[in-house]
Image (cartoon, rainbow, N blue to C red):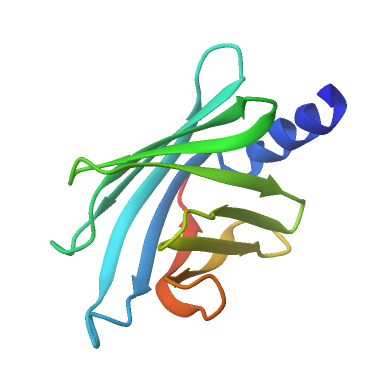
Length: 145
């Protein structure tokens, strides 16, 4: 298990740094959703801290902490509304995925890295019944630092 988790933590390095974000949300047609994201390691490189800020008032700012907890790679999410969620996470050299399978409100996000690692194109989806999925927040991350 440690080797698998170690590899997953190593692959999280692809997220470190500063990013601009731009996206769309199906419930906000025509709205430009712009923002910034940063990812940095807590000392010891066992937990990656993410911070996101958005210009759109209906998209909450958030802090995430990603690392191995309860023997799995997971992300703890906290946002400006007071919401806390826990997601499972999977990293490959090409993708960043996180999801939660809570009954009544399942979510998943898949981000695909460009070949040079400077862009992540991501799409979120949600499901209230566990079988049909609706589009959610779509985001493109562009590395700035």
